[in-house]
Amino acid sequence: KKIKNVLILPPSLRGDILDLAQKNTLDSNENYTQFLPPEAANAIKSTTLQPRKKRLFISCVVRLSPEKSPHHFVSLIQKLGGVDFLRRNGLIPLLCGAKSVGCYADQVLADFEYVCSRGLSQGSVWPFVVIKHFLGPKELAAVLTRTAINIHPCFYDAYGMTLVESAAFGVPSIVNNGGKVGAVSLLGSGKGCIDIDLERILEYHDDKKSNDCCYGSGIEELKTLISKSSRKGSHESRVLGAVAEEARSRALNWDEMTCFRSLVAYLNKINADS
Image (cartoon, rainbow, N blue to C red):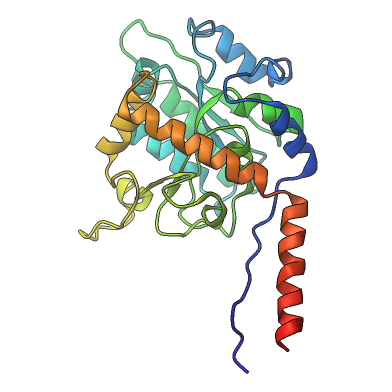
């Protein structure tokens, strides 16, 4: 017998993360700054941006394993123009995740540190952040309330809970387009996240036909988005602001009870139709 109307329920936020996110606003991070990991706190202190810019990090928060592809984050920084591009736009690169596959993780960390230590203009210095452990709820809240853009680096992901956690704290995420990342079903393609053709940018395919996505498919479009997003009133800042608000709303409204009620309603419908 053919099964119709299969229901896919996206996982909801954990209760502790939801509680922290609900207490936070898009314009406030004072509640959680004290919980920043030392690596992140020291990086902020070493810049001159702290008083005027609250969201400083371009972050990648994933397990350091091949399936999560944090090496794509390193490659993307290179494609954007290296750490000097980030310095000129007031963004500190942050890579966070516990090691899963030791030799792979060690190589990713070495490459990240290499990329972030080179390419600066003569006489310039700029911090980068490496956090080698899973973040507790308050640490995660502190990092995300200081994050301007989250990069979800893998081409494919069954879900990607850090996308939803980032959304809950008002952080817009950049994801590979084409419905290949599960959490996009909750956040909304082109609504609660920024879709880009990450595979094309990182040259993993040479198909000349660009995939449909909400913000172009090339590295130049992405550089424009990032570089102009900090300018108040710019089109790019409005795009990211709208994405952040939509993502936050969707993440916070899809709590455990809403998920449970959706499941019960679906089961009741099946029972009524049988």
